[in-house]
Length: 178
Image (cartoon, rainbow, N blue to C red; front, side):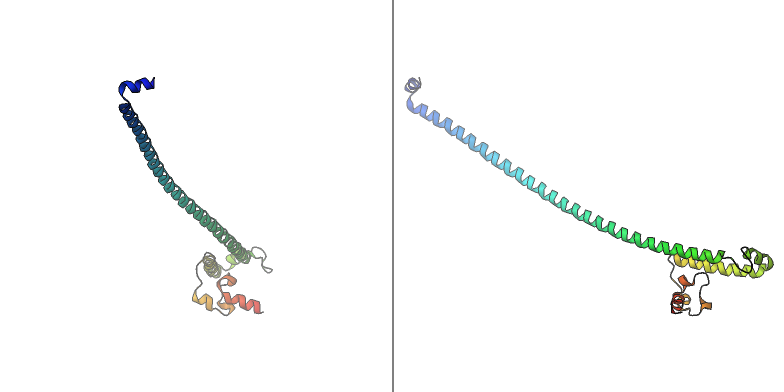
């Protein structure tokens, strides 16, 4: 049948038509291949940019996690140090309370009340002086720096009587030397 078709139309025209059809098919295939190649390259470039951004984010997150872990360790160390300081401060408060509440062999438990009734003016001075001294102790325990007088005090009469160990560092040196 092809042979009769070729003879009818003429062999040259058919060959030309077949050649044009093949060229059209090959051209279309080349165009499709070129489009596919360009599209694939564009997607690869987009994916490479996404991967680069994700790698950067991953490194940033790892750095942030490491920083947070370091911060947590520092916070734990600071917290531990503060707990030790708080325990020492609590102990000093207990010492101060003990000094205030100590029982006298001479006057018994209520010595403060007995002296207050017997000598009100003297006790007012004593209480005011003691209140100032204890207040200063709490200031120092709360972080207030020591005064020059407190640091320079060398005699027990110059020490803060409520908390010599806290207010006057030289009192500790003298106690350790004895």
